[in-house]
Amino acid sequence: MTAFNTIDELLAWARQVLDQAAIESATQESRWLVGHALGLESHHLASQAGRSVAPDKRIQAESLVSRRAAREPLQYILGTQEFCGLDFFVGPAVLIPRPETEILLREALRAVDLNKNSVLVDVGTGSGCLAVTLATILSRTRVLAVDSSTDALAAAKANAERQTVADRIEFLEGDLLSPLRDRGLMGQVDVIVSNPPYIAEPDWMGLQPEVRDFEPRSALVSGPKGTEFHERLLRESKEYLMLGGSLVMEIGQRQRPAVQEMAEQLGGYTPIEIAKDGADIERIVIFRRLN
Ligand SMILES: C[S@@+](CC[C@H](N)C(=O)[O-])C[C@H]1O[C@@H](n2cnc3c(N)ncnc32)[C@H](O)[C@@H]1O
Image (cartoon, rainbow, N blue to C red; front, side, top):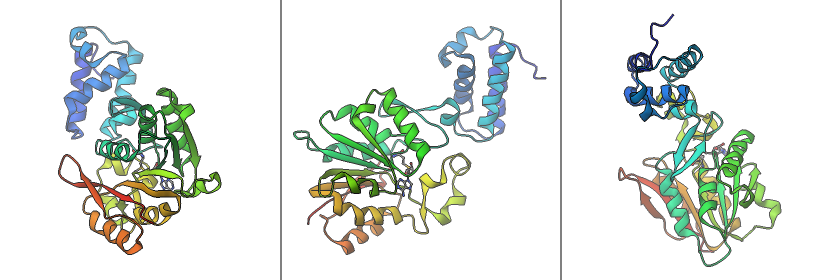
């Protein structure tokens, strides 16, 4: 039986458990987890520090803290992640949106012509963070969101409903661009945006436990090289992009030369354009269809 009765004692216990599990931001995370269990904003915990905790709430807080100590990502425990200022539901079926993907969103937005009714496809939509955010901004754009995972598409739809854009997005299940085949979209797409799986198989075991043991492997691992999805997207996008249409993809660290070489060998695209992330890493590649 744990020896604590008040919020303050519960917080101290949570911090100690997370510290022992080598969680870097143990103090902050213990506040978020305890606050979540008690239904209090974390900044209200201090003002109510001496209040006693009901047994059911204490058991709930203990369960959340134990999950985090077992390295489950905080976002899955709290069920949410912020992306571009919007809150997204996240769970084990979807990748937790990453801050660098906001640069992908920015580059996709740049590629859209705001003066016409464009068509944009988000390939590997996951939580829907890109498709949903884009739909909230681009009122004249037809947005299609593809994923091979039924559960990811359900999460993306829930997020579209949460942001009230569900009626503006077509959710399609299938392999990369194959669901577009029967929709009369050949040569009609203005922008294809994708954050595809790009971890090379040999790198999988070296990932931090939060990623390796909890996030869906199918959202992360591409194949032996890590660039297999980029190669397929470069090859398959030409059929669907209109002339001048853009393929905008996120890449992993040091993948730019391989992706650039593939595009050059394949032909039919303008020279590569690159956007770097905040750590000066080449993160986004942009190609436009030439012929
Ligand atoms: C890296 S996650 C990106 C999720 C989200 N777009 C984001 O940026 O956070 C890659 C997504 O691609 C999906 N995926 C994997 N293989 C696929 C395939 N062959 N066709 C379509 N989607 C695929 C996964 O289910 C996953 O949701």
